Image (cartoon, rainbow, N blue to C red; front, side, top):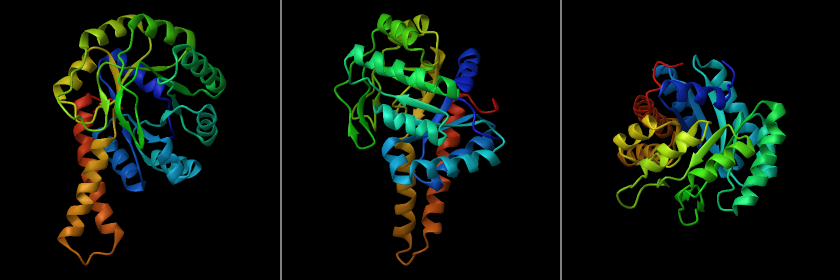
Length: 282
């Protein structure tokens, strides 16, 4: 089927008490693995690229490849631009064919984040696209960019921000981090529950890689409708490629080692789909 809206997917997930997994793809093999896993499990799925990945592929090429895969899939697939703080780049992705966009002004002063996020929402509303935004700051590292020091989201600010900007997805900072965790993750579930009570749009959990399963399930139970996974997929792909090449130093066919990487990513995506409870929800 053709691309669908993340807003449509996540509103259904919020109503029914599960989350849609959002997987970052770096190349063709990872995109294939993500959509194959979703098709196998009967799950809606969000395929994401960061801005550096979109530049690496070529934004138009990223859309063309993933749209072709989505067209053949028996499940709903959305294409999401993850973490961009550039109005021009977000608009370029919208014109290229992404079905949802994250404008990340979380490192900006509140008023600037509010103004620019609202501008993005207004600009893409006639195109029927969903905008995701973040308030507070998720720690760690997103792609090649180190995030500022983490800062938790204020619930009342979250309510006002979501209402004034008109975003379709909201990512609160509750203690998660991008990349693998350096120590034991500590999430503020009481804060999440309060944000869920005040914010009417679906909520997004960033920093899903490396979180214990129980924490993810608890977050979903408190209203998270989209969970982002990136670093674990990269690690699975890389480990499988290394294992293949170290096992056979004569291998020169990229299909052999990248194919093994694709299999590893697909297995991991199946695990995360089941963890999110989205299997059988397509």
